[in-house]
Amino acid sequence: MESGSRDDFVIAIRSAFLKKENQQRFSLLGLIFFSIIFLILGSFNFKVIDYIKIGIKEIAYRSSLIVSVPENLIKNSLFKVDEHFNHYEDYQKIKYELNLLKSKDLSKTISNLENIKLKKLIDDYFITDNEIFAKVLIDKQSPFLRSVVLNKGSRNNIKLGMAVIDGIHLVGKIVEVNYLTSRVLLLSDINAKIPVSLEPGDIQAIMSGTGKDNGILQYTKEPASGKNNEDILVFTSGAGGLFKSGIPIGKIKKEKNLISKEKIVDFDIDFSQLKYVKILSFSKIDSSIEPVKEEIKAINKQIVEMRIAKETIKILLEEKNIFKDTRIKIEDENNLLKKKIINLQNRISIADKTIEKHDKKIKDIKFAELNRLYEKRCKKTFYNNLYKVGTKKYEDCILNKGSKKLDN
Amino acid sequence: MANYNIKQYLLSYTPVILLFISVLNEFDFNYLGVKYFSFNFSYILIFYYSVKKSKGLGYGLIFVAGLFNDVVLGMPLGISSLIFLLICGFAAYLRNITLRPSLTKDWIFFLITISVVNSFLYSILTIIFLLKVDYFYYVTNTMFTFFIYFVFSQLFSLYENIITGKINA
Image (cartoon, rainbow over all chains, first blue to last red; front, side):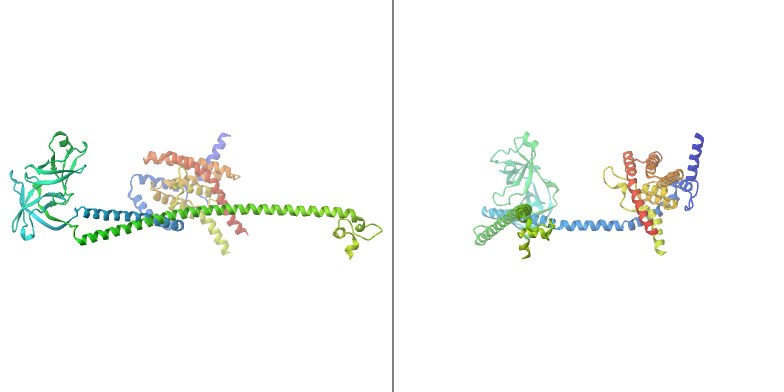
């Protein structure tokens, strides 16, 4: 019995894998072997398999592109529809953001104008009126004089006291002007005295050179304390009117600040490496001049206008929000009223039905009363020819209080 | 007569077209992006048409579709063909031993078939080709393919009934 079922199994397997069926062009077992051969050769990186793979890839990728066309079309259409539905929402959002940004932009412009106005008022509004580039000709490392010689002189409008800058950092000032050359006294020179301000704290001081590669603070109004964990930055203070305020000079390192009582300033740039520098002169805007006053007036007017515009935008935005809230409230009320109307309509229909029932009842009672009184006048008997009980004519006869009235 | 031919043509070539679309399309039921949910449509299609209508899908076409599948998925060339043909073999065996066809029997046998072929596939990929394969993915894929076979078999049979019904009419 057992061997019989095993035989059946073997026969079925053989039939499934070996027998080539009527409609099949290839044998299943043959193709399976073919697949295994593909796999084995592929695992050994056989060249023929690689070529076949490349060929199939070419066909597959192109076919995949064609087959995916309808799907991509549907996907794109759905995406477009979705985008279209979101369009209005996006528009509202962008509009709101634009208003906000406009408001912010106005605030910024107002701040800038206020800044200019205040600077003009405190007489500290410098403009760079002359800018000359020069090459460092001689840089003598003398222990007695820390200076460099530049290739520009009075021929190029170089004047005494002009500031010399490397990048954005202060280098020194012009102390000697010749026709074709000029000399710059570096900040590190012992004779250089620059009014500086220390940050953080906005402490005023005078910085002097040490004759070496750094500077030292003198005449500090307050002790340059600073927080122990940060460096103190040194800028020009603008006092004296030679330089404009805020030109970076160097910093007092926190380690040196803690150890020594003397505040040593390390310059931002190495003066021995100077090659090209910029010579500048600053001029102050005189606030007593009439045009400047008019300018301030114009700025004031601009500020007022912008503030008004800003306020208007703010009010409009608030109004918009209020309208939005009101709209939502009205919509809610509308919905509530609609519901009430529906309820009332339901109640009216119920009342109508009750009235109808009531009328019918009254009619029935009236009929019963009349029936009791005029039954004999309408009811058909074997000796008269009146109406059968329950018919329409009988009902009419009763309601008309007897057949005679009906006939009339 | 021409109408009859078109319908006959539709009936014969629909499985082949479906198989090639499922292999070549960008949209793949095997990578739906839904966590834990995926199923192998090709397995269902091949098994169904091999059990019901051996002439519906030719072995040669299944072999080629397997090669395409390997290229598209970046698997070793020939492995999908082997798996597809093994499913055909299992289906042919079922067809030979079945006297009274029933969907439940087919369904149970399909579970055995895909479990065996997926185990075989997992073994080949990990042992011979030293590829890292997510075992959990294969198990869930097998389970969902098994459950969804019922739905698709009903759909395929409905499609055939519609076409053949019209032919008879």
